[in-house]
Amino acid sequence: EPEVTQTPSHQVTQMGQEVILRCVPISNHLYFYWYRQILGQKVEFLVSFYNNEISEKSEIFDDQFSVERPDGSNFTLKIRSTKLEDSAMYFCASSLAGTGEETQYFGPGTRLLVL
Amino acid sequence: AQTVTQSQPEMSVQEAETVTLSCTYDTSESDYYLFWYKQPPSRQMILVIRQEAYKQQNATENRFSVNFQKAAKSFSLKISDSQLGDAAMYFCAYRSANFGNEKLTFGTGTRLTIIP
Image (cartoon, rainbow over all chains, first blue to last red; front, side, top):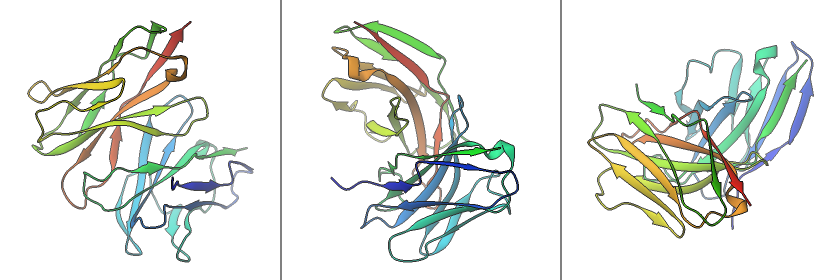
């Protein structure tokens, strides 16, 4: 069964450094998402991406964050200058279409720790 | 803005018994979708079941079923014949049916423990 994959599974970085989190969505999916989950808290939406553009973003997704689909398979989240509060689990998800009936399939997550 | 509330931070159930997890939501929309996701210790989010708001019939998936009460804005998950592998964090989520509003809004989760 096709699945969303994410790399790395864990990343430790120093405050102020840039990190890039990578995701490979399910191959025929067209909509891509990033969510984050701070330890012990609920999952929060960051951004959705379709047709090489951001289609929706949350208040959390400020200028520090960017997303890109650099080729036909990868979808990346870049955090430009990490802060301690960016420590969280980051989930990538994809769906076939953007309509609500389409299920979003989640990857296993990248655990980011900012020191 | 939509909100999702899960009022039970933790629940426990004996193996083979039935448990119900509660979820309420607030929205002004008439058409939307509701989901239950499971997050085991591995932390991956796994879809358990989904419900379309326009359908009156409650969704079922094997041992998992929902009680969807649209007027009350309630969406509970019933797990029958609980198994050890059901132990996980369960998140209720809402998604608008409006195109361009694709995000999932999650509740705070319920941690389910299965007692052998």
